[in-house]
Image (tube, rainbow, N blue to C red; front, top):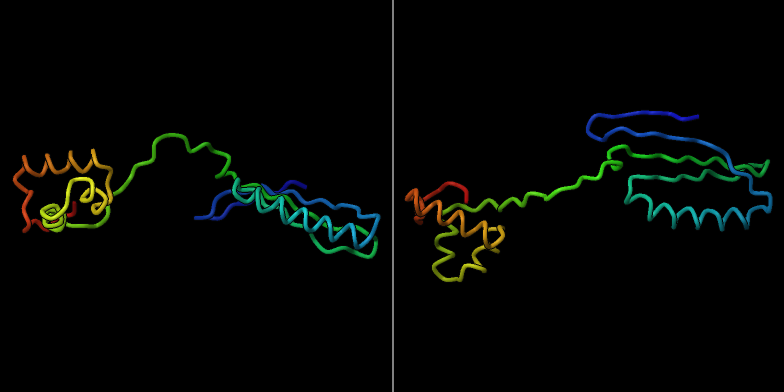
Amino acid sequence: MLEKWSEPGIGQFIKESFSISCKAGEEEFQKLQKEFTQLNGQLEKQGIKLRLGSLKDDKQCSCSLELSLKHMKRDAGKKREYGTHKSIGAVYLYRKEHNSKETALYSGLPLRSYQRRVKKYKEEGRWTEEEKAFF
């Protein structure tokens, strides 16, 4: 039976439960458990969880498959890189002793973004060591 559920902050999920027959017995079930563990390790990255229950007397075991709808989206596009929480004054003082590349790494920005910000702060007259605003 297909079951849908959601929880705020976690997302929406679809769950399917079914049973598998292990006619060969305990050895085949142990092998199946190992395969499920390996498969689950790869599928969890894609938002899919496989669960295998214990073997019952009638050589049936329960199994569930859970899909995260959040992972079904592509999430395409460039991701924004945020800088670190350093003040303009701290970056200014660091720049006095280091080159632009090292200062860009220190500020947590790509080199070109660092250069644009420095240019902007110089034009605004904020490129000083007393400036307390975040870089």
